[in-house]
Amino acid sequence: MNWMTVIWPMVTGACFTLALINLRIACGDRRAAPHLFFAFASLAVAAISGFELALMRTSDLVTYDAILRWAVVPIGIMMASTAGFVWSFFHAGRTWLGITSVLLNLSAQMADFVTPVPAVRHAVALRQQETFGGVHFTIPTIVSQPIWEAVDILSVLFLIAYTWDAAWVVWKRGERRRALVIGWGVTLFLLGARGHAILVERGILPTPYLVSFSFLGLLIAIGIELTDDVLHTARIARNLKESERRIDLAARAAALGFWTWDITSNEIWANPAARALFGIRQSEKLNLSHFFGLLHPEDRQGVEFAIQESLSDGKEYEREYRTQLPDGKIRWIAARGKADQQEKVMRGVVMDITAQRGSEQELEQVRSQLAHSGRVSMMGQLASALAHELNQPLGAILRNAEAAEIFLQSTSPDIEELRAIIGDIRKDDQRAGQVIDRLRSMLKRRDLESMPISIQDLLNESITLARADAASRQVGLEISIAPDLPPVKGDRVHLQQVLLNLLINAMDAMNGSSKGARRVVLSAEPDGQGKLLIAVKDSGHGIAPESLGHVFDPFFTTKSHGMGMGLAISQTIIVSHGGELSAKNNPDGVGATFRFTLPVAEEGLAA
Image 1 (cartoon, rainbow, N blue to C red):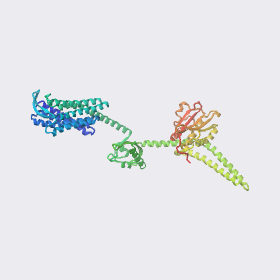
Image 2 (tube, helix red, strand yellow):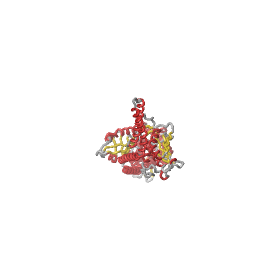
Image 3 (cartoon, one colour):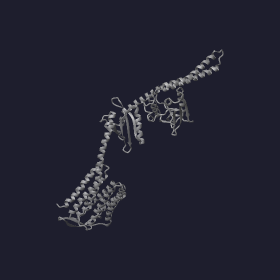
C-alpha cells in the first residue's frame, strides 16, 4: 500500500459522505433541489476518483482505454449536476446556456461510445512514472479527434458562461458573496480539471488525472453556501419554535382557539382550546357538517353564508354566533379566518365572547332604564305643557258644545251651523288626543324606530311642548329654520326627548338672568357634509371651563336638583342616530350652545 492508494479512496469517501448528507437533506425537503444536484455531483466525482485510481494502477493498454471510455459517464453526470445546481441555487441566468453545455457534453460522450475508437480520448501508449516515495503510476499517450475535443471544451466554456451569467443577476440582487463564491468555485474547478487533463494528455505534466482533487475546491465553495443555508434554516426553525411558544402563550392568555379547514377533504383540524369551546372531544373527528350541527339553529344560515362569501370573494371571514354545548348551555363565539385558494384551506381563530355579550346586554338594559328614568324625570315639565296644550282644544270643545246647546233650544235649529259646530268639536278632540299620544310616547319605554321626519315639524312640536314652561319662566323662545331642508332619519319620540332636554337645560341656565335677556334660539341648517345641524342657543351664564369637558359624563351635573343623566342619555340617543352632540360657550361670552347633527333621510317622508 502506498500514499496514492490511501489519498484517492479518502477523496472518494469524502465525496460519497457529502453525497449521502445532501441526499438526506433533499429527501427531507422537496424544495431543497440544490442539495439534490450537489449530491449527484458528489457521487459522480466519487466515481471519477475511483476511475482515476484504476487508471493509475493499470498497465494494460486495452483495459486502460476501456476505463477511459467509461470514465466519461460520471464526468457527464458531474457536468449536468453542476449546471442543475447553479440553476436551482441561483434561480437566475439564461437557462439555454446551461442546456447547451449539457447537450455538447452529451454529444462528446456519445461520440466516444458510438465510434470504434474513442473520439475525445484514445490511449495509444502507456508508460510508468515514478513519484516521491518510490511510487509508480501509469501515464497515457492520448490522441483525439480535434472536432470532438473542441465540442468537449466548448461544453465546459458554456457551463462557465452560464454560471457567471446567473452569478451576475445574483450580484445585482445584493447577494455578492454568494455570487463570487459559487462563480469562482465552479470556474476554478472546471478550468482546473479540464486544463490539467489537457496538459496530462499532451505529455506536458507527468501526473495522474486530478479531476476529483479539483472538485474538492468546488466542494468547499458549495459546502460553505449550503452550510450557511442549513444554519439559516436551523435559526429559522429555532425562531419558529420560540414564536410558536409565544403564540401558544398568547393564545392561552386570550383564550384563543385555532382551526384549519381542509376544503378538499372537508376535514377540520382544531387545537385543544378550540375543541373545548365547542365541547368536542380531542379524539372526535370534525368536518364542516359536524361543525354546522354544533351551531345554534338561528345562526347556521348566517355562518354558512359568511364562509361561502369568503371563499368566493377572498375576503376575511368574520362572524359572531352561538353554539350549544352538550350540557345545554349557550356560548357566544367570535370567529375570524381567511381562505388560501392555492392550498385549498381556510385558517382562523375562535374566541369565547359569552361574558362580553352578557355585559353588553346588561349595559343595554341599564341604558334603557336610565333613558326611561330620564323621561319620567321630565314629567313635571311635560305636565304643565300638557295642561297648556289641552286647555285650548278642551276650551274650544266646551264653547262649541254650549253654542250647540243654545242652537238646539230654538224651535227650528240651523242644521248646517250645528254640523259645522260638530266638525269643530271633532277636530278639537283629535288635537287633544294627539297631545296625549305624544306624552304617552315620551313616557313609554320603547326601541328605536327610524323613519324620515320633517325637521320643521320636529322643531315646531318641541317648541310647542316647551312653550308653557317657557312662559312661566318668562323666557322667549325663537325658532330659525333654513328653507327647503330635507327630512332627517330618526325616531321622532327620542329626538323630541333630546330637544326638550336641551330646551329645558337652556332655560335652567338662565335662572337669575334679567327677564328681558332670557332668550333661547332653536335653529336648523345644513352642515355641508350631508347632515343637518340643529342648535339650541341660550343667553345664560355659560359653562364653566373646568366643566365643559364633563357635561356629557353620566351623573355629572351643575344643578342642585339634577340627576346628571339628561345630557348623557341625549348623547347616547344622538350617537345611535349616527350624529354627534357637542357643547361650547358662545363667542360673545354670553350663554352656551348645544349642537347636534342628524343624517339626512335618503327616502322621502312617510305618507
